[in-house]
Image 1 (tube, rainbow, N blue to C red):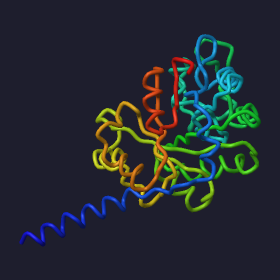
Image 2 (image 1 turned 90 degrees about the vertical axis):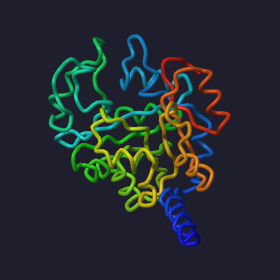
Image 3 (image 1 turned 30 degrees about the vertical axis):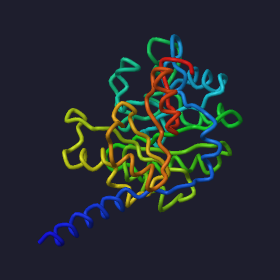
Image 4 (image 1 turned 60 degrees about the horizontal axis):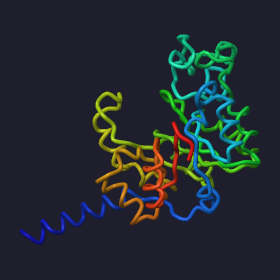
Length: 269
């Protein structure tokens, strides 16, 4: 009886380790590790998040940047964190249901800054620093979003990596752009996240990795402690950890000592 139980436990542990599979040693890490990354650009007074002003400030200060990309109803690559425009623009539109002609006139957070497109942001970093590009899916548009993004990125000579909470994005990348550095975004999803229970369990524990084989895991730095799955991704599979969103110099220094890349905001390192 005891040997059978032991074999079952070992088999479960083996399957768990295999489920966390990552890809190690992407050649871009030598360059990516030279930078810290401003979350949604180096935003502050007069420089709203995900605005051209925030991205210019990040590039000028020598930082890389993390940014968010949505697919509009007419196929434009819109840079904004939320699908809904109300928080940043005070107007009630959903990006995926809206055309660029509708979204273009909106201004950000009471400033004269407008919502940018990805094609507007890329030239700011081409000769400056890498970008961490997060793809924001909605419904079943993952493949369409990825294809449209790479219509642009295939001709971009600058350095970048791509991340998403949605494993379908990473699966698309593995199949269609295997050379691109890809990362799984994650955190401890709570019940208010809107993610179904079984998906919360699987995604927070990185159990889709065996399908997507990410190069890195971008994990909420306040959720990373005592996360055995994340630790195994790093130690067993050699995945790079990216920590978001770091808001103090003390946290940044501690995480960097542990080998993490930093996505920061609310202070300048």
